[in-house]
Image (cartoon, rainbow, N blue to C red; front, top):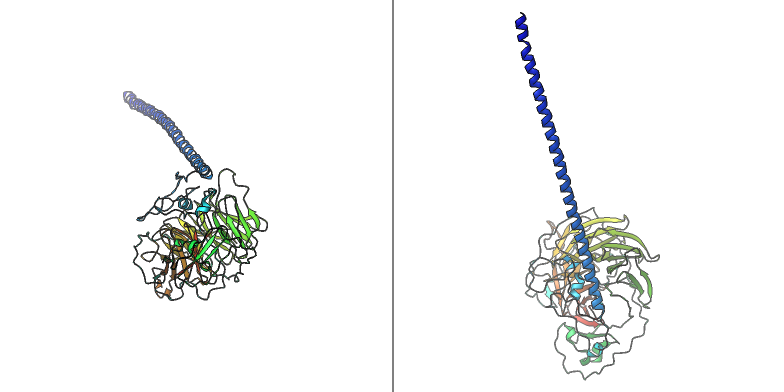
Length: 558
């Protein structure tokens, strides 16, 4: 018994040894894992330091690039202001539309001078005709015009509530060109279907404003231009609607009007039914980028570098200057778009800093500041109810802003830069022109695309201006293809909206260069167009004939 008891003690001792060994191995493994964790933490810290250094390098590179671009923009302005040649230095911007393009590329949208309209003024591409030359007498001692980006909007006067809005009537005419049958045109490649980035729902139709009063003319006419007039020829050259080809010195006195620094020629092949006279000359110290009349026609607003001015139309007196003094004073800040509220209480401005400011004109204070666009704002339009504002930007979006709520109501995205916007007279639709040659029309309440005006009947280059007719059933558009088109908006059908959304019923041809602005008169009797050829032409919308051509600027007509 004693020996058996002593034999049972050996296994217990060996078990304890095993446990001790296992414990030692566990402690060794734990120590190794701890060391591995420490090495891993050290490596992660090193990676974080590398990542931070890369981030700092990227940030510094961005700041250096930004300062470099600002220096280029400033030097470009200084060179051109001193009378040097127009510079083509590149400043960051978006490329033009990606569709096939046989002519020179469209101007880029970007920041600073190298932008949508700055590219036009620099004659980007080198193949388009430049500005029409001044008469030789006027070329002597002429100051070098200050560079800058002109705007492309013309005033649209308020009308009574239309009897028939867009998409509610049948087509009235077949497609014609300047009064003749349809012409063969090259099909536009266009772009794909637009995106519908729809935000909150908008608002329905709204009341209209009263008819505008006529512009009072109180300033005496200036003395006519003192230059010799040779005897008129027996027959004028047949220039069609290209009235810029006519020499005013060779025209009869009843077919032209002349002032000290302007003249107008009337189409000799069309019965003259209009007359024109200079009301006032509004001088500015800076480039004028945009012009807009108030809805009653008594005031006009202009957008310049850092400020907007409002003038009295009858007297030419400056009524007020609106400038945001909180903005950094370094560099330029061009106001590219201005628009009066229907009652004339507010003025909306869109600038290169991507912000929309709504000014209380009487107090010269900012009531709202809307931010959201990611590039320059090129176009603004107030709805007739005074509550909604539409804006178009190089960031490929149209945005609707609600004044009452003080915020964004709708975002509409497309594939290319937006150059121009217009809200229909009944407030239900918004139209936009784009670098992709298309005109789009949306319903504001739903954000639905009601029409896309393009194709073989459409423009063959970027669209820079759109305007609704007073009744809202038609739309006019102006393009870099040197034409103006009138569109009949499509009616509704039982199966929904027609796919085209409208059709071109007339094409106006006669400008020698880019068409940058279009408008219709409040009585719907005339279509107006401004061009880079420095001419403003009045067109008969029924016949397609040009009534007159006005020239009075040293730069593009806006």
